[in-house]
Length: 92
Image (tube, rainbow, N blue to C red; front, side, top):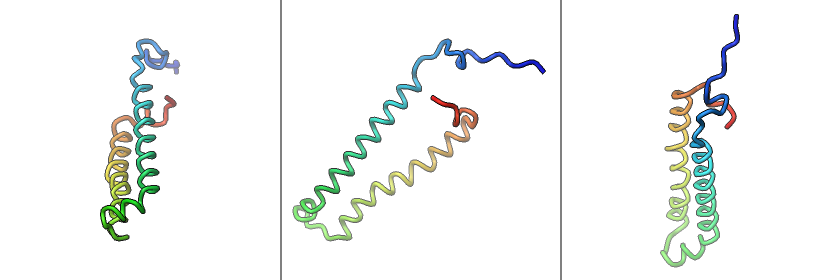
């Protein structure tokens, strides 16, 4: 059995750098979301006082992050695995 010749993308020929841009934007978005959660947790007492939120209402505000992750991470992971299962584990 003869070994297969690597494809053009495996050899780095014609690579556009799009995957590096996607990873970079994903990192920036994750960092912004982290800052948002951190700021919200620090400002929670002031938010409760100014907006007259009770503990349950403020818990609902914090749960918005959990629901966002639950609703979008699971389907996006399934889509990524279904669209390119071999590429899922390939290093960037």
